View (cartoon, rainbow, N blue to C red):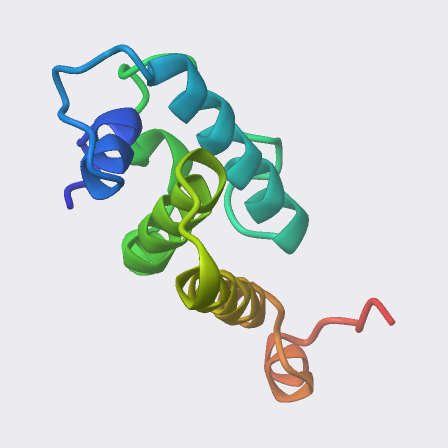
Length: 126
């Protein structure tokens, strides 16, 4: 995935919807924005809540650095799939575990450890 790619188009592709099929765009946009809200709560992304409204917004609009891009894209795709077209049974449990793991990893990426706080010469928030 490229930072210049459309967020909506990439997510649609990952959940199995053709880029040219706009019949579910409103639903997908709502779920993508839910995922961005959750990422904001985890401390991932820009300081203000990021949303999309069409296929015009790109990953470059969200990221200041592309190091988190693969995991964020994967997280949003899982989140949207869970909300838009949830599987059943054990597959649903597996999807939920993947989402929780990515949330933990993304949060750990943006939440510095005590050693990192010391190196950056910051005062801990707790």
